[in-house]
Amino acid sequence: MPLIGNARHLYETCPLCENPNHRPAGKADCSSHPLYNSLLPSTITWQKCDACGHIFTDGYFTAEALNILFSGAHNDQLPNPEHVERDRALAAVIVDKVSSCLEQQEGKWLDIGFGNGALMTTCGEYGFEPVGIDLRHEPVQRMKQFGYEAHCMGLIDFKAHDGFSVISMADVLEHMPYPKRALSHAHELLKPGGVLFVSCPNTDSFLWALLTQQKMNPYWMELEHYHNFGRKRLYSLLCDHGFRPVKYSVSQRYRIGMEVLALKPV
Image (cartoon, rainbow, N blue to C red; front, side, top):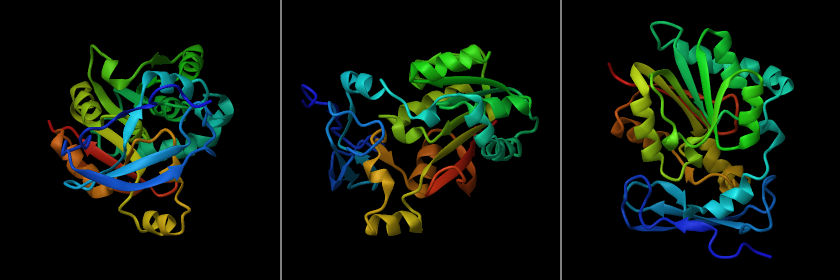
């Protein structure tokens, strides 16, 4: 039977620019998603803001729906030595990029939504002090067992006594109902001169348009995503929250992905 009540809190305005005018941008069937549960709606409805052009779902999941969604996890989302070894080289590419923007390769590194822990463990190899947060209980418990500092909570609820040299949002910003709040809090946590790493799919890319035209774009049916960012819109969002984007690159981790490095000015 379907989920009782509404599964999503509907957005009254664009979650980025707060303009109330938006129009339908299509629907997608998410029932084949690995984490889909029959208690959840089988379709995702997308909207496009008339003012800033941002593409977002018509709403974000309620606490009841999230409990159902977070009751499971991809095998790839769970920390274990096999996953870390497989993804270590890809994580090292990210750490190298971040390090190139820092005067010293040291300090605390906050990895938001750390998943299988590959980035946390690899930045530790480089001399950083890794701290991770994740909304799923099992990855947090596993990282704690491996001796790492990990917390089961969202970014907005996370507090720290000392600032971070690096904050990474590796394919997580699109999962957050209100990205502006997340970036504001990240700015507070980051030290002046620190680096923010953000990666997500890029709607401004040729491949995004091509795969959408061919009805093969997997991100329209991505159950856990609330947003589809383009490079231009992401850059303006980062600037609005006190960051200075300094480097763009193509992701080696996910299809159609972009990676952006942004600094918090001194």
